[in-house]
Picture 1 (tube, rainbow, N blue to C red):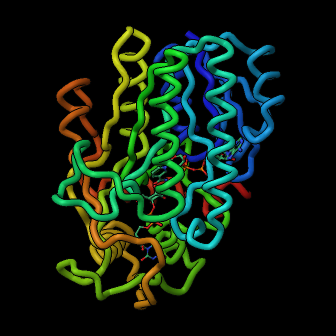
Picture 2 (cartoon, rainbow, N blue to C red; picture 1 turned 90 degrees about the horizontal axis):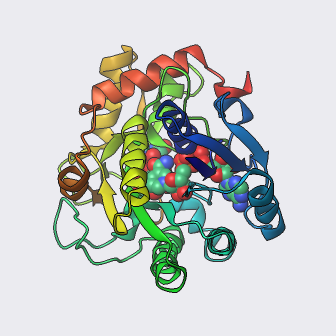
Length: 328
Ligand SMILES: NC(=O)c1ccc[n+]([C@@H]2O[C@H](COP(=O)([O-])OP(=O)(O)OC[C@H]3O[C@@H](n4cnc5c(N)ncnc54)[C@H](O)[C@@H]3O)[C@@H](O)[C@H]2O)c1
Ligand SMILES: O=c1ccn([C@@H]2O[C@H](COP(=O)(O)OP(=O)(O)O[C@H]3O[C@H](CO)[C@H](O)[C@H](O)[C@H]3O)[C@@H](O)[C@H]2O)c(=O)[nH]1
């Protein structure tokens, strides 16, 4: 089976590509390297440099490297905070990119498509943890873009018969021994705290300590990137076996505040990690914790990294070996 992974040079896409190869799939990665890294592409994958915003480049990739049995789309703009400053990157560029890919998928009769969706669909949840019945209230233009893409999937299934999985990751984190997290600029909490432990940054900012949470800082559900990869493979197998389209919320089911994550990094690294309270970041809801009961029940998904310490240990191991990420 041959799978196209767009955004496969990025953080979650490269780890998932490696897992797909281990599971016996052929993998073709399509990425414009705006954020991804050529070094993160597994050696056994075929790499195609291209931009989803250029439909001719997608068509060329299908003609040269297809046919594809399935598509995993990780490629988009990815930052809640940035989307509050540049909504056009999200509501225009990433939507066009996603629709271009779906359009070419339909032209080639692809039957299985998995979208990287997000917890940012749920800005005003009625209950915690958040299950798939929760009302969709995007928290930012980023979340709105993912909501639109989920609606697009609905229509591409009705019109073209493409079955889909919409996987709403909560906070992806952790590293494998060979693939790590490196964004430029880095905005994610755990790699930023690890930069303090590495002596590359003096302190970590806590974005707001006046949220309605037990210690006042935001609470998130941190799920290991390898566990996200296994969720993709289970979902892909279900779709390729003729299973129905599905939407899953993916997290560990436990929330940790920013302050608790900082303390866990102190415990793992032995570094004091100075922290300073800073203003809230626009677009951040107070608490986001997933219920992943549906994928556990339907596909038997079981995260292997169940503690925040084990996740941070995996990230600390990679960052110690790659203090400059992929830049070295
Ligand atoms: N990191 C998280 O916690 C998280 C949480 C929820 C959802 N997501 C979603 O998961 C996906 C992957 O996230 P990530 O953290 O691995 O991001 P990432 O930036 O590391 O990876 C995205 C990849 O897509 C590529 N890309 C972007 N636009 C492209 C385009 N137009 N054409 C071709 N390639 C393009 C980038 O170069 C990069 O390699 C994203 O869609 C993101 O919105 C991430
Ligand atoms: O220096 C920092 C960086 C982050 N935070 C806080 O730490 C938490 C986690 O922030 P990240 O930037 O690591 O992750 P996000 O929750 O903003 O975003 C992640 O989850 C989102 C869904 O909620 C999106 O899907 C997005 O793509 C993905 O990166 C947030 O409360 C944020 O305010 C800080 O306090 N200080």
